Length: 229
Image 1 (cartoon, helix red, strand yellow):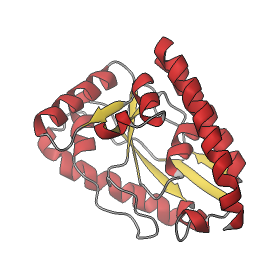
Image 2 (tube, rainbow, N blue to C red):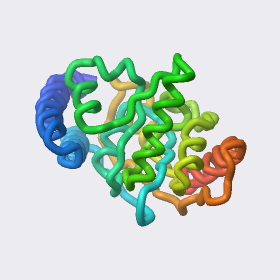
Image 3 (cartoon, helix red, strand yellow):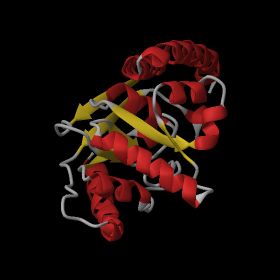
């Protein structure tokens, strides 16, 4: 616990510095902001003593990356190590948060307002347009952090998006994260985690009504990846 308490100010200053850099570069070119986020994720994990093992390769072209959601480490792991040009879907209210929200907006990440069906639909349409334009999307279909509770149900929205854009879904298994934080942030301990990219699941020929079945198929692949870790 003492080590974590000593590291927290460094983590905060580190994130603040990179957020400022990301906002500045994002206003010029959002692709450069993505590079800043990659550097942030890698240096933050190094500071925390977390080593990431990457398995698998992304497919050519745009895809939806659907990952399990364990805890706070998931974000720097994906930003630092997912080998793709991607944007994340985030809650619109977060866009107002100082620095982090400003960075997400400047870098072209995709806000969604789930409280309003019309606005949520428009957000998904914009995300689909970005996918068709060649930019990948990373999402946590469980919708919330699961910690050590195991893999949750995958919601349909991410898979409706992939079907509408007609891009493949890449199942992503993040393993070892719960062991790094078994009882929350104050129980953090250094060690190794694994980011596994599995065989893409095609969406060609699927209709939006099949999003639930696609979600189950991808969830099953993520679950197998966690069992194999």
